[in-house]
Image 1 (tube, rainbow, N blue to C red):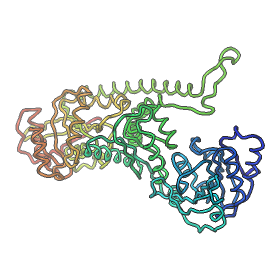
Image 2 (image 1 turned 60 degrees about the horizontal axis):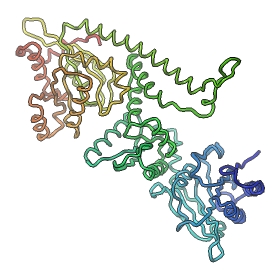
Image 3 (image 1 turned 180 degrees about the vertical axis):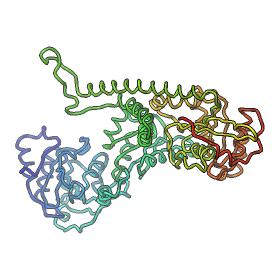
Image 4 (image 1 turned 30 degrees about the horizontal axis):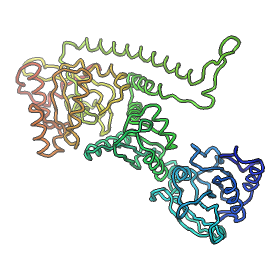
Length: 568
């Protein structure tokens, strides 16, 4: 059975040179550590003769499993060229004979350092193919180190024969420790690296980064590192510069990340370029939000809207390789170019989008009929930034003591489906006044366009309300930016109903914050959904707004007991 593979730039060498490379690849090395000096001397001579770097991948038994001709940086991935079994658990050794003059310590640079980290080696022996003035070849041993800038730390330097003959003490590299964490079944959270573009305002930069990290955690991922670049001249192919992407690729390996999340929406070409340069899957902010919505969708209507948004987002980003680009037979007698599997997939997705669009229009008509049945009652919609406390406020107003509360969690996009409740305002000696309050999906900056289009049937609940209660969380340091973003989104949705700002979480803010929002919104109402503060004043304001009457002198707790559910 053939155990060694010869890959890389194998078309240039002569057959005799390829035969010599094959012979060298079959030579054994000492088990566990070290290397065969004669093999490396001959490898260096062939490297000078071919004017190419040569790399050996040796397993724990001393068997060479891969001989790579040429620089690692020319290959997208080399994982497919070495054996699949126990890639991370196997104790690999990487040996590189470098043609040309190298710097001090034979320092690994550029893409080869990134690809070498993917091999998960215990150490990396790098030797100079050119003989020095003393008649020896300089060499160095490098080990993976997550704390090092390049991801590699120089362990030993010296003559090649000394490093081959001296037994190297077994030292467990940080890269092996990361691999053990990744292979541990108990480690279920996906480790992600955040790739961001920063502006001139540090406060806005930290706000955007905190929001991106919150989105990643809401999706179930664990951010392990952040790679920032100052916003300057944009590279239209990748947005980030080549040097910064090289640094990000090293950070991915150093921290054991399996996914890169960007804070900007990427075009299909930019996403493919980033994945090629980083050698890692890439997800932009819009796709991350869609992924959160897919996890949160519980009702049939919610899943329908999320699926439509995801298909619209992914259709222009479809890509194929291998058999997916092969053509089916076409024309008379199966002649002609036919169509590729990729084209068939696109057509299938387009048909699915049309089908979901028809179902979505039926959903919109159904919700319109429900609104028509409730047209005699005043309608109020709770709108605001995600995780501002809208669901908690709805529970505090309508569901206390009934045990039928809407799910409210300290998480982004915990609510996707609109929920409508009937709020009864009791009066002495007369029937209670009733109005409908709807909890809507939360907003966020730069909402993905496919998401807005797919959730238009849900957003109609906001557009058809008589008045909007704009909930803002004063406990959030960025409450002012969130308030501005919500106003902007509502204007973009053509929601021109009167808006009333509700300052929530007043028990978690200081007096200066209360004074600032009072100066911005003179008629602001102050509440605390969790503590129940200000709810009596909110009911009085609702009664005054819709009926122009002062609130009746009734025990406020009766309002909860007389609340009833309405059809959502």
